Length: 349
Image 1 (tube, helix red, strand yellow):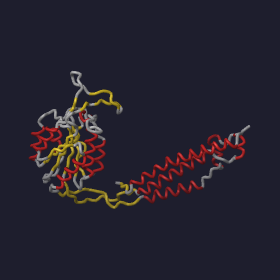
Image 2 (cartoon, one colour; image 1 turned 30 degrees about the vertical axis):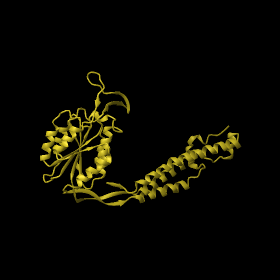
Image 3 (spheres, helix red, strand yellow; image 1 turned 180 degrees about the horizontal axis):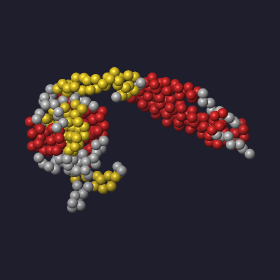
Image 4 (spheres, one colour; image 1 turned 90 degrees about the vertical axis):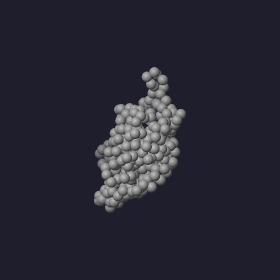
């Protein structure tokens, strides 16, 4: 396990393209100046017989590598050397994200599916020591990430989710609720939370009754509606470009609308709450408040400890490269002449 202590220093890498641009600008200026004062190219080669074409480029590469190493050293990467078990308290929170095609609608910027992922990410960012799990559902539900304290993995799986990941289309909210029941692996856990992020279009119609049975198992369901009641068309894209819009069997363009009533009913049956997903801050604040009022369950979690600094290796590499750069003169040396790079030793007749 590694840790990057000062990620802000990665911005220093932008200095590398600046250095490269300056190098080419100076090279162009030199060539222009040489052409102005020395018309005959053969005369220029006689005046500077030891000038190397290869060495300046090599010096540039070495200097940029040294700059990159120094930047990584400033970031101060650390490696965890020991895995230990710690006691934590929290709530098990499972996110069920709707990945049906209707989530491609863009009535909420940038799109319903992107907004859903943003909401989950922000909720995770504001969690304390709670455990999280992720479910993707469309025509059926599939587990994406089991209950874990690894928020980085949760965000990674979340970012990879899209409306093409499941072949079965539709919106089976009840399947997502049924699958969520299997996520809570602690029989003594009394506070279990399921957060459903969807546009509410339930093609099965019996999600509310399933939600009631979930409530009997101690699962509180919060529903977050993404989309608008006015609705929007479902774009069909290729390489990110809209080619057409989804049509029904009669050739009419499909308009998908937010069904807030279904989501409200599901939340009410499971002692939860419906939240309008148009405001990210509102969703985060309500979830923080709800979770803070729940009893916490103590559980064990493994995490890396005793992180050791690794910056010294990159400092050493940077100094070594700078040492090489100092001794790389811009004139030809014996080994360069033997290699005859860029046909530099070709004799003129």
